[in-house]
Image: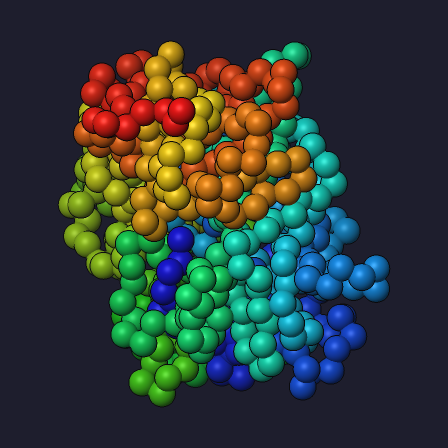
Length: 512
């Protein structure tokens, strides 16, 4: 999701630190030299968490207890390097991360070297459905005590540098319906992206330089959320730190130049930010004139979660004279005076861009009705009136069982009683989700499995289903392939199968 970043300072570094810290604000994250390595032999690692859009539930709360790196050294003495550790855990609603990413934690003094896995440990998952007449909460089962995420190339931590790890958790693909008893299992499906500050990039797709010089956001670049306490505040910049004890490299330099609206917990404007204030800032990362990574915020709200939060949805009305509108779920939202409306690329828009059918995400004060929005982000193309989806630009899904691998980027899948041909687009991504492990892979890797369930997201073309994402689920010989998917109430809309023309391309058939 984040191919090029537009700046920040801290560890995934003082007024030149990096990081957008989130979970570290919970007080239980590992953020010192806990890995027993001298600073001159170490770098820093930051973990960001984001989510792809989904319509399955209204909230998916995941309680993270530990995130660590596993070295390529296979010896028994090679201990995991802990990036985050909290016995009580830090809970995040994945569905609040649809249009932005949050820097979950920053760990300094990580030993230099290559790491082959990111180990993620979760203690609980709660699913919340608000569209069933009354609020429904379901605790999903976990298939094990940890999940190993395996990128295609090693993750390299270099001396005095910052490696950003983005864990893009696909909430929808992570839900597994167990037909015997109807239990819900949360088996995390996550993509790992790595970005190294100041790095030259990796030709094999491992680590890219995550900081763009021109500050231009890309279509895939989400907004960044910074949460913490103000340590230093001047007229044109401030440092936001996860806690009073945090080092400067775990703080975020944030610009206060320009017209940045600041609101208190009641939605009233604030003239000045002072040291000690707790707040959440949302914006894009850019380099300033001096080359320092700096968060350029669109808006700032004083306070902490759960008073401040995010709500996604689709507009069901235009904004009225009181700057209020309603979403299709019935939520009332008031856009505060001077609060901006932007798109995913950070371009400022007029308020009349909020129209019925427009997917959007609102940030602000969620402790009362209506929600007081300090920022609204428009998510994509306007969906049709009366559509059931929350995302107007939601791509199609194709689900079935692998028939054959045709080439390095094409395969055949049996779906809806016919054979469909899939092509993984050039910038597409594929993961193989086995028990206890999710590995970034290539289409050719699927040949080694006897049976594979394919869940693909993309668009139907004249000859191929053009897949931007493929999740491959290896099956046992006797597994019911149809058991993987969404719960019954969240199925595809009527007529949502592949189009009639989506047959094999001319001259292409199953290999002999």
